[in-house]
Figure (cartoon, rainbow, N blue to C red):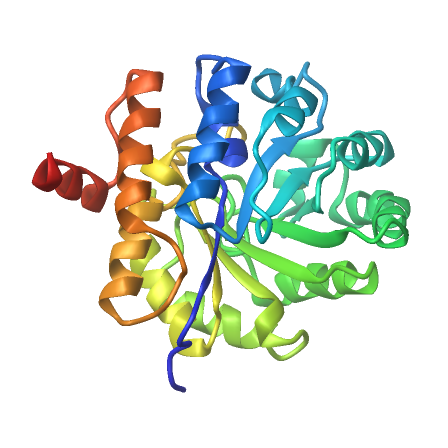
Length: 301
């Protein structure tokens, strides 16, 4: 199969990335961060999470962040929601898209949200309906699709069952997430081909963590299947609080360097992203995890 000529990048650093940082980033800095990402040309930015601040204190200021950002006309600003209360907050905050979530691992589901996979998806039924009734885009994030920190390797049949359940809720885009970064290219390709057998290929997104250094290889494998949506995080920010040892999301700078080098269009200004990655790393007092970001920043300094 020929490679996609264009790819949509869902930038997740402002939500999935920052929620795993130890220090709380001030609201004004979050707003500036998202504004910088918007200016770089991203089509879709995860901007907030409306979950209990008890569990995710880093995201407690979601409403203020959403109210303060300067919105780019053709950018989708997304919010993660756990329930109807979260949906109502996201709707009031002006989110264009809400993200519901589930796991392809029973143990991970229990550890993460204290219920079974089936129960977690059933709980989202009224949330999904409310989102669709309100005219919002509905996306689902499915974690541990290539492996679980508790159950080991995840079976494709389990992933497909979750995808079908999410599809039946009316989900329009499906994040197939390697939450702990254990996937390898052939396994990734087989999984993506199987998922594409039950939902349209253009609705599938790859979400890869780089724990074992396989994320770019897995993205290439998914591209070869025809997947054209990928998640990434500026400076490689992120991790997973329920997966010991899981490092950050694949760095956006690295993904863009690869895609642009392959002649695949993204509509994103790589130089702007490199500067933003350096800026947010400085704000957090930590080095960037992006190899391309580090190299390009030094080259252009």
